[in-house]
Image 1: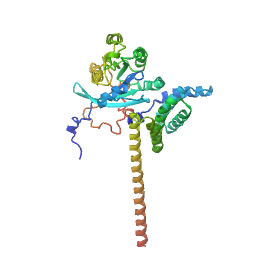
Image 2: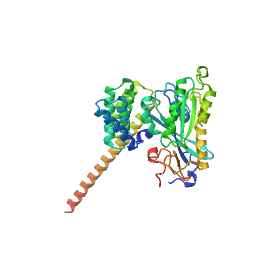
Image 3: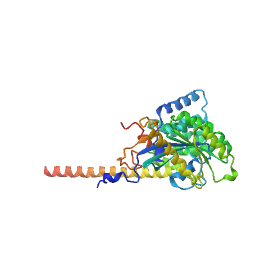
Image 4: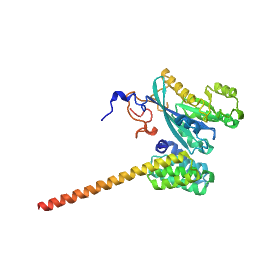
Length: 150
Length: 224
């Protein structure tokens, strides 16, 4: 699953789908498949703003698109959120999918990855706080020492 | 303490080559079940349709060489087809699957084969798999007919059962053997980015699943 999340699209391929999408958009009617393909390509981009655009597109398709494809939209939205480190939002999507398909191994795998990354980012956050705290204590100590000397 | 380098080549997660595979074919023919049977040695009943792509790996041995297979299992739904095509590039092996109990899945093979031929390179080994061999009583495509199709198109062919596991290993391993043979013959250029093969020096000690082990980051030809 990590490989699926961390896989990147060839920018040329993304460009191709982007052009098709924009073309249909300017004609006033975007086909469902065009939007879906473009969304998936955006999610696989290296650029944060593309991924966010992809997430928005899938959220729109979830509400307004085919009912049978809602699971796919939830999954890709979760992948997008994972990539931009919005882990809580990613979990929300994947939990909605798992309520409908509790045995879906792809969804279960993705959930495990999200929880892992969430835990890691939490630990890193705690590390930063601890480091910050230690720095403050050291600074206070230093100031105290200097004042004493004076 | 650092691990002794001499033992590193014998470590179970060490490998000399990486081969990229793709699994393609109609929806519901058992592509994900084949992958699961091969990587986990288990049958998934009630397997929902794949969303986009799935990925699996397993290390095998061919002629004393450890080979890591990186397998991209693509969704069979027509809706996904435009984007799943982008996963074909740089595949060393393509497993093209149909369901022996559903003729329509066999009839669509020429379209899958066209994609496989157009989007991979000329050395990509294409292996035809007739899956659901355990459901012989419901058979809709004879072995002989499919064998003829395979021969006519220069494909390797086997009937498998992802459910019982029969011939599943053979399909994945024979594909790897053929790829390895192409390397030995010199017909597969290891330096070509599109070959789908990466050669790892035998003293490489990077463990499987390490942070730099993602397929996107270890593209062939990028190491120099």
